[in-house]
Length: 303
Image (cartoon, rainbow, N blue to C red):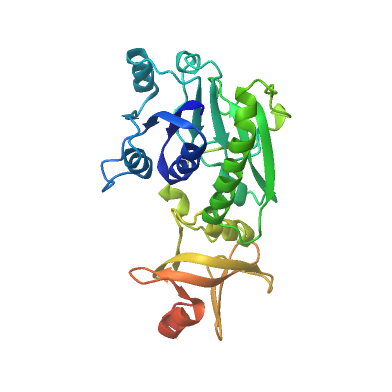
């Protein structure tokens, strides 16, 4: 069984590691340390300790360099899934077959830290996974293979992530052994002039601006699930919107609230956003009918 060094952080990396360990021998796991505010053990660390894999923690490129300066590993390849540190040429060159990154986009589209969220935010009709031999750039390496999958109109970052994890596992199982055996020659990424970039989504991104078009806000509702969630103000009521759709019911005014029987619509710069599920501050998520049963009069009074 081929021996590899695994690089990854977070639940996506943990899910990938759980699959990869069944197909390859894990020599060592390298991951980021848990944040000071995080309570408990991270998913990658937990899985690595469960299966008795040696674990190294790094926060920076320099710390990663130090690990390879101070240790000699026998693996001829590395696998990266959701790691978040750009590696130096010195680390890359420690592996005869390089380091293979399973990146959850159709490169060169959506290079960077948050390709799945940006796929939804941009209304892309297809997503995918690219297996890439990394270089020192940001997701600029040569491709071993890539494969696409349709994006459903109700897709969230959470549901699309699960689909892409499954797709990634299939590609790693089918193509990585062939690449390591010398049967596949990686190729340059196509259409480099069309490269796009995604930044790391933050909590600041989650606050809804009613001056944006309804189609943009509806995509944010889906893209920000499960985190950081789409946060909005309905008058004085703070909510997290978990499900919504666009509605063309005449000229809209940004922030204007309309309550019609069991419907709640909010005006945007273009069309209306119909909210169908939400979570009021301090409450559980609920369908709009349950929300209106408790908040209808307050919403009407604010209109």
